[in-house]
Image 1 (cartoon, one colour):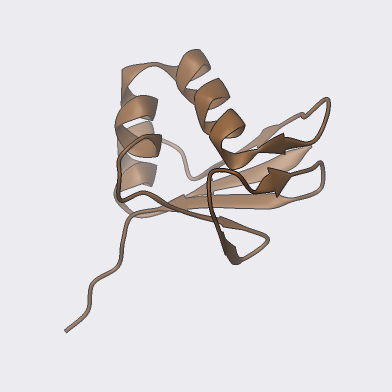
Image 2 (image 1 turned 30 degrees about the vertical axis):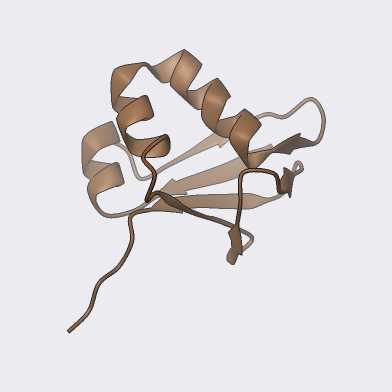
Length: 83
């Protein structure tokens, strides 16, 4: 089981801050995104497939090819700006 967190506008768009998903084998960030979009539809695609969506696995920036395994925490969030 992995814990998935959604922050900022993604939390609002999807209507949830976190969820858990069971993995049957090690997968990648891209595979997880595809699975969530397939199961969730357009809002999920809008959030997870945007070019500027950031992802962290176990609080470390991750990329689409990075592996995810049961027990991991995955977070999706928009870019942060400051000033």
